[in-house]
Image 1 (cartoon, rainbow, N blue to C red):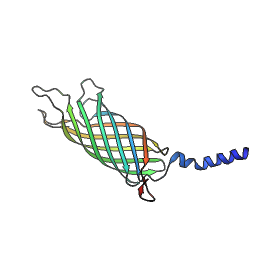
Image 2 (cartoon, rainbow, N blue to C red; image 1 turned 180 degrees about the vertical axis):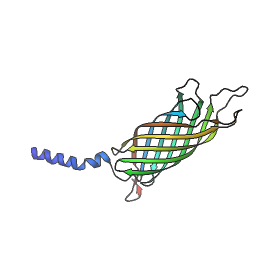
Image 3 (cartoon, rainbow, N blue to C red; image 1 turned 180 degrees about the horizontal axis):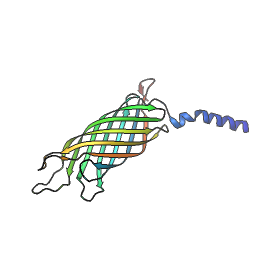
Image 4 (cartoon, rainbow, N blue to C red; image 1 turned 30 degrees about the vertical axis):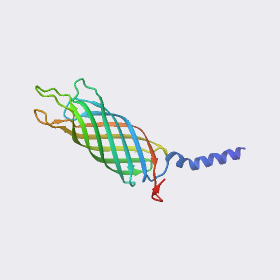
Length: 194
């Protein structure tokens, strides 16, 4: 009986890295993250809070394709710069992997639908689409076959055009993190869908 338990324990310890850490290659992996993002405006005393999420597909171990969505929830300052903000962006990221760790930097051009809350005499800003450009640096820890932890720092650059005294800089830097989910949709060895 004791011998049987020892064999079972040895089998579990021998297979644990596969069950816990998953596969080394991330090619063909699709991952999803959703959370809250704390922003800090670059030119104004404003701290917007966003709901954010992204989907990312690993085309190879070094390159991924990423799409992001950001929605303004509130501002932690009473008279915040942004009254409304919804942004989508799509781009690529470059990855440096070592074991369970994955560090990436990316660039994502996008479109934001925004309206500043700044008050002008004889001018009321209206929501309108504006181009945006987001730069991200993300660290992820792939600790299982289905889940990973992540922390991401982003800078999103955008300007509201057409205000009486020129463009309003609505750019911000933010930090987000949490638990993400991933699935393998492509098998690297055979190069086909799973």
